[in-house]
Image (cartoon, rainbow, N blue to C red):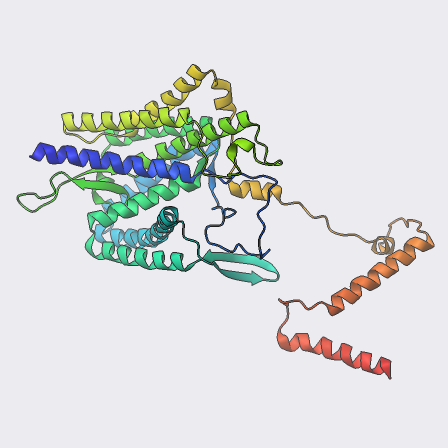
Length: 439
């Protein structure tokens, strides 16, 4: 009976590892761009919360970042080890619990919204909150009643976790963290991904087999950074014993699998002749997302991940000792991509494929506006050479200046840089001058 319960726990751990990777990878697929624009009643804001134009900002992991992953991870791990060793463990865990509670509320709410919208197709009007300073938008929040409802549910669940440390709620928080990370963190190339996996492969081996640091931190760290399942749900002595898997063993391979899925779609779209500056290919039937496409790289990599995870669990079960999962997962995922590329004759395409985060794309797309200069101002500058202008040009310029001045006088700015009392004085003076001029 005990063995049956243990194998059920292994199956549950495997399922909780695969689920966020699968759904997070598909969630990382962007909406395709094209020349077709959806007509809206309102130009400024999107009308519905599930607007296809809404995209989350993502964070790109470059080759330089990938090289530094093991370094940053080692610094963080060693720091936590020293903190737990020399400070009160309970107080440290209180602070960490508060930090992860804030993150957990946001992650659970976002995942809850995606689940409800994905299963029901519900459309709700959006609320927009703008924080503006001197004509610049400092903060723009978009949310619906569904977001508020999910926020309330996630706050209740997180509160229950803080008071009870319930393992089920801990798993929900961990799965939400994993899903969000796989969706938002993007490798910029397979080269970066392989460097990251290779570096963390060495990192895991050193800190697990070479020192006591990893095991010590894992035992003292009381936060939802792992998924767990009891070896026996109904133990005779009433004390639950758990088998567990760290979130790093889900997220790190997960963002690599998400890259493989996006590459599969890229290859499919390239064969269709997709160009974001043109209309969508007819084969997509007007769909910007949600269309099917072959997934050879994602399938092979997912199969390798499952095989690597099964190997990790098997070795752990046989030798009755904790195993660094990336010891098996990293080589499995790398070899799956390289092997598939060799078999398909696409090794050059795989290593030439690159991506950019949405934030970088937006920054590149923004045009740099040059400061306007005027001929009159140029002539008045010391040492500047005057440029001859015809009488017609001068007349045109004077008319343009007059028309601009008139527009500026008549236009009411909704957000002024001065207070109401200050802004009323110039208007009153202008009104008095106009009255005198008429008389």
